Amino acid sequence: MKRGGQIIYSGPIGQHSSKLIEYFQGISGVPKIRDNYNPATWMLEITAPSVEDQLCVNFAQHYRDSLLHENNKKLVKQLSIPAPSSRDLHFPTRFPQNGWEQYKACLWKQNLSYWRSPRYNLVRVLFMTFASVLVGALYWQKGKKINNEQDLLNILGSIYVLIQFLGANSCTSVLPFIARERIVLYRETFSGMYSFWAYSFSQVLIIIELNSL
Image (cartoon, rainbow, N blue to C red; front, side, top):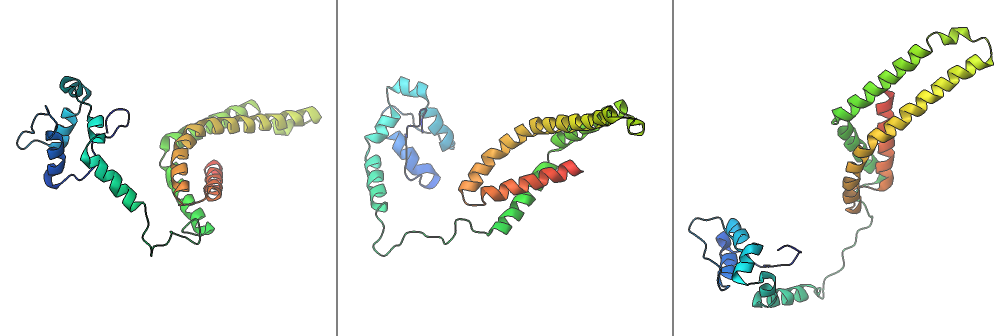
């Protein structure tokens, strides 16, 4: 293909790229390949936009007008018609494994994925440790001095704020990690490897496991 997604060659390569070389050398003005030269490098060099401008040749248009293109269209049309004795592909289930096997596979995958991300785990542990020590120092031995309802509410409020603070930080720190995983999730889900619910439940369990350590 050339820039813009236009096809400049589609067909057999041949032994030592002989078919490819024969096709491009058949175009007027294209320099011959040197002995012992890499055919792939030669093809990239002669089909560069600067070479097209120099030779006044549009390789994409040349391919569309070629006999090779016509033969490819005939082959596609021929292969598009199923044989009389053939049947459509049919699978009894959408996924090759049952729900439990999907869940175990996703759980194993998530476990490896998170434990192989030391930067994420280290930042999360250090932040939780720092926040816990800070709040603990501010309210050191306050539980022994509960004289009225306000003292109790102060302690409960500090616990609530700490949990909210840690939760918000965990959500923001995990977003880049989830964004990278989303691409893999879409590809593997639509290819039938596992369902969304298996991935979601395994993700929740791994997060609970990491936060409980």
